[in-house]
Amino acid sequence: DIQMTQSPSTLSASVGDRVTITCRASQSISSWLAWYQQKPGKAPKLLIYKASSLESGVPSRFSGSGSGTEFSLTISSLQPDDFATYYCQQYNSYWTFGQGTKVEVK
Amino acid sequence: EVQLLESGGGLVQPGGSLRLSCAASGFTFDNYAMSWVRQAPGKGLEWVSTISATGISIYYAGSVKGRFTISRDNSKNTLFLQMNSLRAEDTAVYYCAKVAPPLAALDFWGQGTLVTVSS
Image (cartoon, rainbow over all chains, first blue to last red; front, top):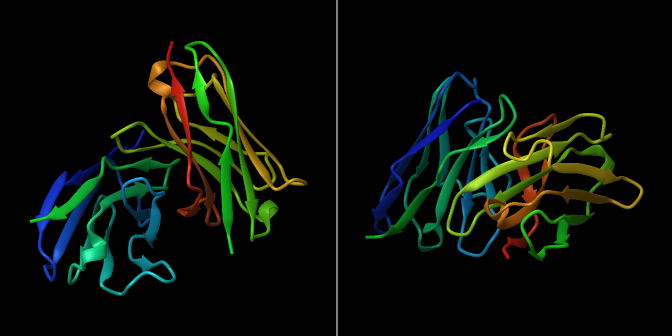
């Protein structure tokens, strides 16, 4: 099974900050990686697919990069609506999620 | 507008069974694979199972294989998850999700239904 490891688990930041979350796969997954945003009590929302493709309707301040085993999600200028938990997910072999990164107010 | 509405959750005793349903609308249901993902209270997301658009190909996480059965009725635009031999660790919110083709990211999610396994 492919394991996904995110870092950090919690990130404290302020509005306007540039924020980066990393995700590492236990083996190469090419670019078969997605990023999701989840707010408390709500369903996850797809942000990025195929490592760097922005889902329709998602603000351009979100971007993804990486391939193979190392990936990152960057929020170029953190907005109040962006405080949430973020998950990476591989879909190279079945589906596996990272443990999540909570972005909280500093 | 894509809509996914889960139902069937509730309280069940350990060893019991429950059947979840997910009613889909707003897209051509029989063109897309569908998945179930769960989230235990205060924990992260865990993929549970995926079924192809035709229902021919089915995939399960190791934690539920042999106990859970995914199925679909394309004539009724509905996805199912039959859960047997339930354990306390199966307690979670269960989400159904639409799979972007070919078997890729989960591009739309329902709001979830809570399953609680407890005596």
